[in-house]
Image (cartoon, rainbow, N blue to C red; front, side, top):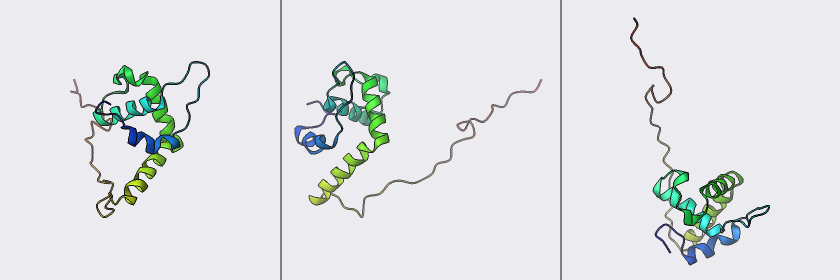
Length: 119
């Protein structure tokens, strides 16, 4: 097991709520390895095209991430893990929060026109 991959115990907790891959021809990539590719991206911040090849084609990792984000699969995984950790007393809900701060971007970041010298 590499540093960014799920352990057998972690995989066993979530494998039953992940949808079976849909395919029409070539056998699908291993769901566990695709999920490990997603985790690698989230932990490293690298572009999708830089997913190491042992996780499968980057397009597959990206497509399943998109599909699972839209259909609520990833939300169900988070909910399951939160329930599991809550039952073990490993979540302090008084400390659990989402940062909602707002940071204003500069005008240039918002697409403002550049100032040019008038001839």
